[in-house]
Length: 280
Image 1: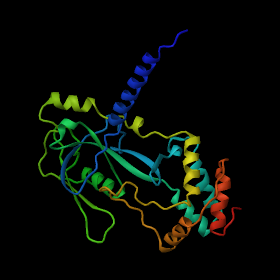
Image 2: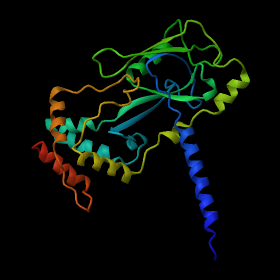
Image 3: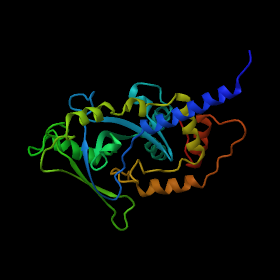
């Protein structure tokens, strides 16, 4: 059978373009930059009673962010290692194990006022802002701020205090209810384009998670407490002085790697020797 190389090239080009368009639509993240913003939070169509926002447990390994498979009842190599480290009941192992705990983020679909034409975006927040938003529901002066007809816009103010690593984010509700969009047609259109969080934040395969975990360990288990806070988030993890010292020591350790990849157990042994501890 003759192969039409030009046709194959055109097909590859089309697939590449579709992939690029798909990725831009799948991750419409809204970052609250420095300054004041007005947004309208929208209700998830599939929200459960008492859980208006979707939550995801995320592992942060530097620039690699993994949705924790264990939250969906799937095998999770990070959890397996974390449980193993905690089981030794040794303080040094606990330091490493705690770095393997996922951080829970809440995800809210929003419309940014003045940029309604850009459609619905996702706002992900840590526990402090999450608690603030939940508090609005039980506030007698606010209530269901997600209501599409009589809900409330939110005012988000992001500031940077001198000497602080992370931005401060303050959230308050407008004092007058309003519809999410000026007419029902615009509202129906924007709601129909609601992002599918299950497509955006889904766990990777066991093998991929294990590979990223191995790479993190081989890099000396560097600390990363950003958890999405460097651009207006609210929930930076605070470490103890001793944990920071151990993290500094970890960065100085070089793990020799050859052509053959180390298993998770082998790389863990290197890390354990670095901390002068052993797994029982």
